Length: 139
Ligand SMILES: [Zn+2]
Image (cartoon, rainbow, N blue to C red; front, side, top):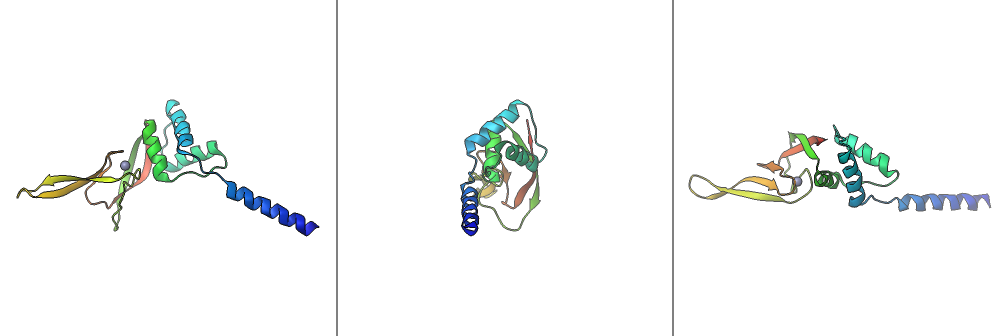
């Protein structure tokens, strides 16, 4: 009997863990909009993540790219430093949007890729090897 009860409790716990919801973009948007209107700045990404976690209780957060993208939509300006990496990234390392080639012409008049740009957050890179780190979210 007691064994059955323990088994039952274990199953309920598993179900509860599985049910853990992911916060929607809309929820993140509303929370950040609220923070923005209160003129709250986040001196680091972990500060922003903690703010979201405190307000979302038990929900899982979307990816950091999505969170940064929503922060930009709300009106935050993102500052960061960069570090060099060996492997090229494919998408914008700030917000996860596609990177567009900026074509210019060299002295011979041949088209060359001068830069890559994110149309959403305006991130620019010459070789897709400078990785943004240490994000700050300012007004
Ligand atoms: Zn971007």
